[in-house]
Each structure stands twice: as C-alpha cells, then as structure tokens.
Length: 215
Picture 1 (cartoon, one colour):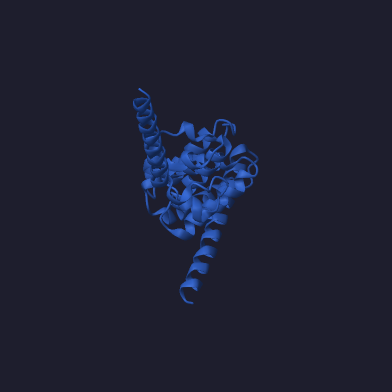
Picture 2: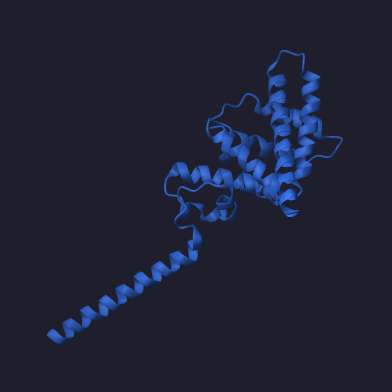
C-alpha cells in the first residue's frame, strides 16, 4: 500500500509539473514578447500588440482602456506616419480624459465619409454634427458605435484621403459659421483645427521617416 501511495504521489506530482509547464508554454505562445509590458504604452509596443490580446497583457481596467484606445488610433491607417500622428493625438487627449470622445467623433466622421461623395459630404457632415453637438462627454463613448461600424471604419485603408477631406470640409463649414454666435461654430472650428494639426503632425513624421531612409 505504501508503494502504491508513493507511486500515486509521484505520478500526481509529475502530472502537476507537466500541467504547469503546459500552462507556462501556452502563456509564452499567447503573449510572446509582451508579458512584461503591462506599463508600456509606447507607439512601438502598442502598434505590434493585437487588439484582442490587450486584456492579457495590461492588468488594470484603466490600463486596458488606455491601451485599447491607443491601439484603435493606430488602426485607422496602414501608413506609419499617420498612425503615429493619430497615436500622439489620442495619447495627448488621455491627459484630460478626452481620448474616447476624440475617437468617437473621428469614427462618426469616417462613417459619414464612407457613406458620401464629394457632392454630399458637407451636408451629411453638417447633419452628423448637429446630432452630436449636444452629446455630453459621457455619451461620446465607443460602446455607442456598433462593432460593424468600427470594423468598416478601421478596414478602410486610405485614411490620408479621409483626414484631408475632413480637414477641408470642416474648414469650409468653419468659414461659413465663423461670425455666427452659435454652438455649431465652436464645434466646426475645433474640429477644423484638430484635423489640420493632425495633418501637420503626419507631414512632420513623414519627413522624419524620409530623412532616415536617406541615411
């Protein structure tokens, strides 16, 4: 009986060790190089982490949300310069908890852009703004955007064309309402400035990449 008990204990111990090794191996495969990055929000790190693996890497609810919003920003485009510019915009907005609101408005803009053409963009954007301008920051959350809308927005590759079109359209609306004292004029002006700042950052990073390629 003692021999049998000893054998069972040894066998159970062996199974536990194999289970631990299997779990460790699975974790290594799942997380790869990311398991020590729970406080790393750099552009390079966020860019390479898959969106569906963020909850496996970041520990707190705050860090998970922060990483997800930064990741979504980088997914608007395959262009590295624009991706970095969007990442910087969202990162800066996080200091004042405006990052999700910024992404919400940009996603709404892109939905309008994808459903319009050059003759209807301005009028459709104006209607969208009118429906958004009275929303509070607490209502401008990504949960209000359907998964299919987010997928459509993020799968559209030519984001540079989108950014340029939005900048020009908001500029046109801003000029139209410039001397009018109403809630829309402030919204148009703010978004016109946001897009043109984004375009400026994109051009700055694009020049940096071009210089590096010439070294």
